[in-house]
Image 1 (cartoon, one colour):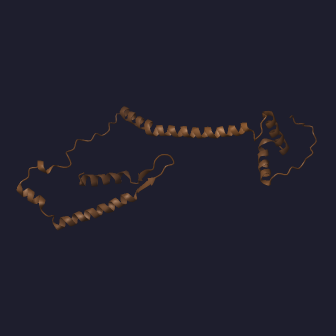
Image 2 (tube, rainbow, N blue to C red):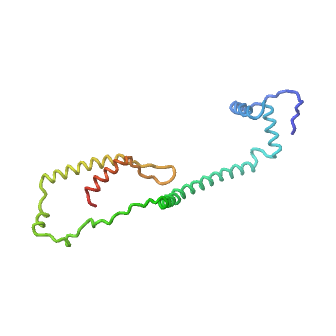
Image 3 (cartoon, rainbow, N blue to C red):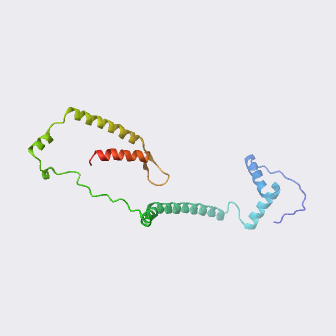
Length: 193
């Protein structure tokens, strides 16, 4: 086991693959001053540890290490999901409570659709309501609808599907905040839903 330091430097040739020889030369530089010392160190290690590279203990150890790496990845993913689904929303709610930020409460709005039976109208109002729309008003409405379609197509072009590595795919809208506010004001103010 112990190396004899005083031995003569007589060399013997061993035939090995060229690629393996290049790998060994690179590795040998990190372990010892010479290739012989590197091989001696490696043999001493295996003899003292009483193992071989093909022993079942080493193979089982490597399998167990790969299994543990997979389990740790799974646990990490679980923790990330917990944080995203439960901890972050709870943190945001508590932060808003302590900061004094009160979420906006929608004011109670009037019913959007009115029942015609409950509305009292005069005979003239009934006639006006059932009249045919003038051509100018109709053309203006059609022009407005075409403009709305163009704007809607522009918004649709700015929507893309994002498929993350983990989690479900989601839609991404590439609109700036002021552009979104302008669209909300324009369309929510014009139409009654």
